Image (tube, rainbow, N blue to C red):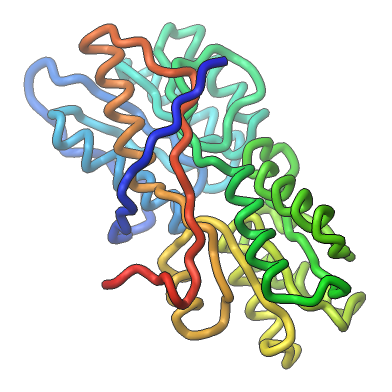
Length: 307
């Protein structure tokens, strides 16, 4: 499978209201894209949606953004809605790979091209997957943690929901580095990508492993929940927290000295690239790469982006 690694400048987007939104309708024969997104209650997906909407506006494309709100059944219903609207292309950020497969199957049946932005799908025919280099990002997180704690320290890993195949690469990369460094992972649990569950899981881990030195969470929402649990337990100076995504709340937490670091994705650029890729395919017949990797980078107090 051919892959292309492309470098983009980091762009931090302003979050819009976390509701179902639609682009401004355009007159005439303007193309219409649908963006089916898993959860606009998560800042990361708001940034992707902003990238989609801004690039669509720049290219004179109408876009309908529909939020599944973490519900796989609603996600499929949103896809059906887009099919009824006869959109020209569907951009998809599924709840998980299996729900994504159902969404793609429906779009394939309707002969609407699908471009997947992150997460991935278990099956079906898509034109392109645009995704961060998650394995490398997990290794970056692991190298950072290893540089900050003793080799005999205990660490924990909090994962996204089962079925999140691509985000699981973050955990894989982190675990690879821990094994290479001889650092023991004493707990690995899922918090299903959610902040509240991240807090609950972290509370349980701290009770079982009071000497914990660090935790890596596969997204910032879970990392921020872990931060709250660690603070409540009075262990903020003991347990180092590293997340993944580079959301606004995570950057604020790093600035405040609560989170130690995050591996930042470029969700706004991912959304823009999704629209660019779909438009080139439809307008120019340009066959996209099957996978495009968007680079990631470590954000610490020393490398926080300037306002």
